[in-house]
Length: 247
Image 1: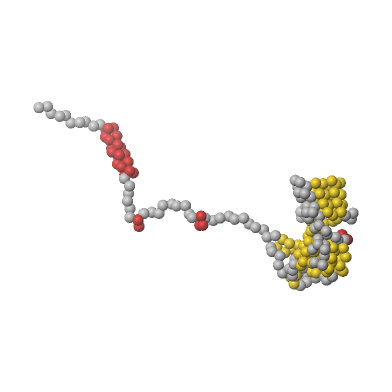
Image 2: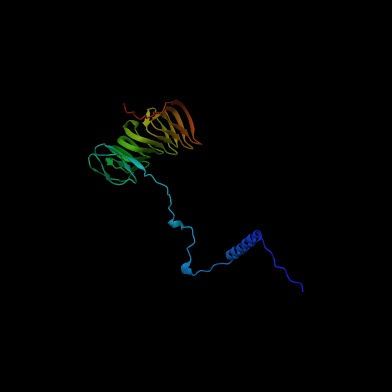
């Protein structure tokens, strides 16, 4: 009877066998899911809810309004919504009241609100002070010591020499012809304006607007649909330079 000879394994074969054995066990370990009790499980990383994530919103800069005290004439800036306030200088209360004038009017009006003068209305022997005046009537025999914005609507009648305004708007449908020089900060034309204008800010001709006469200034914008037939005298814009400290 033939006897079986023992299998001889060298050192290199034994190392390879051990490696194969260890690799198969690791594979089985990875394939075999580990079931742990709920209380012992580590919480998996999850995306935080949107409400918990810091959000970056838009910063809204409050609008600033130029106010002139109708008691002492002091000019200051009011941020945010226009509301009743007081003059920082004379400490008088300034009211926000909106007025609508129809027919004949002969009393002074002072407000940091809006005064609307309807078509056919006549203001005479009176003084009007307001943040905004919308004019479709007649104020030729009245005075406007101060107005931040004057809107000239169709039918407006006025004496340019009695007006002290900052911004001027020519409304759609209005036709204004003036020989006297018009000085203001910003001028917006939606209707028709023929005059020599000297805005310190910008002349903007809107769609449907027509400007003729002379323009003396540094900023002129003609929107698509706007028209202009005028002499243009462009000036260099004023550049404010910071003062350097003398050493």
